[in-house]
Length: 343
Image (cartoon, rainbow, N blue to C red; front, side, top):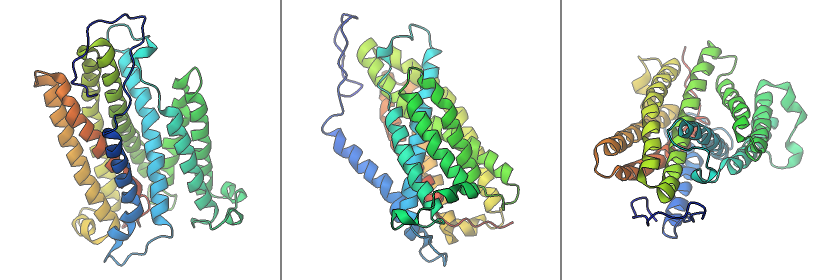
């Protein structure tokens, strides 16, 4: 069932309205998209490194996939908390739990926990993919900065899952914040020039990206449910409010992304590195994807404001979610490529 399908007349509010599940025709498309997103970090390192003379780290494809799963697992609960907060600011009754789709946060926390556990096992073997359990030195994680950050992410996702399954799921904001901080610190080792500046840029960039990607996914889920239950206006108002905030998020993401790139690739070398290094190639691909996302967001915003049927904005918005998923996969790829640091 699509969002543009006519709805029946008023129903008894005491009788719950069944929500259609994922259609048989849509499930294969989702499977194809998930497979494509997984192939980007799996096959991307060898493709990006082709002809650059740079060495590929052991197990880069698998590590990139784990990092992609971790990023996606972060986006989903952050987006749910964000959009649910926006929904409560809209006029009208907001306390009816039937107006909110079933949370994906517990599943996301489980996926994030397993991905963080896999990444911690890599750190525990000296940043090498372990051949068996005997190679993993769990105690060694406490002896290094990267090991402590890996343990922090494992524990944070575990706590986030418990909070998501509790009666106060909003409390998962704290362990999720810990994951964002840990990722920002991990991306900028102490040997880097001004590591706190880099970590600050990454923290803001990652947080805004999670709000954007996860928020749009959950906003579309809420819109679909509210349209089925309460009519068009109930969901369109939420999507419009999200679109206004998303403009600010895009501006911040662009600014922090440009600043981070200039720190690693100075202006006089950036054109050469965008085509001559693996990191530059992956970054260029990510920029193209973000530009496509921005174009789709603008298209959806114009339809939302000017089209006779505001729900026609859902088509470009769904395409935007798909493109954002590819951006997340490209971000996971970037984390396993050699960084061309030139100070």
